[in-house]
Image 1 (cartoon, helix red, strand yellow):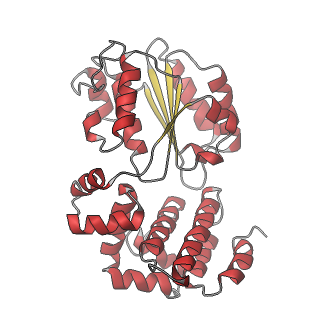
Image 2 (cartoon, rainbow, N blue to C red):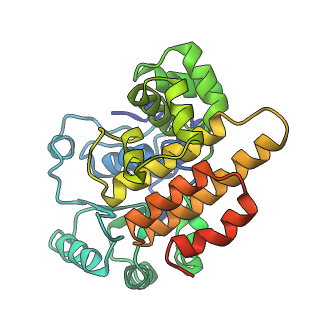
Length: 327
């Protein structure tokens, strides 16, 4: 994989190539921006480039920094078995715990002298003790370690963590690279144009919405889910996975996110219905954050069903905290 395969974000790719070529690599980068725009993909590419044995990092070269894909390091990365790359991600029922962070640092300490890379995805899922522990690490970063923090909502991070990172702000893709990404799925150009308007240049969200449409059997079936009460809120997870599947935390999060995107995608062009779609999308984002904070997945699914079927949004704003068990 090369930088050329990270579609869009041309300015960022060129800037990172110059930084790597001059070997002016920061100890920590914060890749920040909306979900579904390619932050994780860019982080993977940066990690591969940093760890490649033949990469022109520090050579002064001005061309794009690409891993060779052939050396022992690249082969180990391709097999998912490279000890110098550590990925911290949230797991079912909780965020990223301090124990996982400490174990990761212990593992990296066994490879002192080599360049090592830590990816934290998403950084806002760090539990409070883990966030405080990361801050101490960033204050006195170990030599040779580069941290790549990925964040959909950087405002939720400790300001002191943000201040110790080189921030790379990424935005939605423009139409052309957006369609290029969707073509690899493949999604046809006509659908791609509609999805671009629906999700605002976030190809990850577009693919997720297209998959939900296919699972539900088309626009009419998905529209019924968006506007009609469901008999059992747990049935909502069918939009993000197989019917009758598990209702674990990550599946519930994926369900809420695709329903949020769908509500906005099918918003009226004008009138009060557009405001209601925006309000429902906002309320669902609050429910998603409650899931991330280890709230009850069953209560969150019930709250999601309430939001979808609500007609009195003023009353719903009052009832929702109680439904989530936080009032």
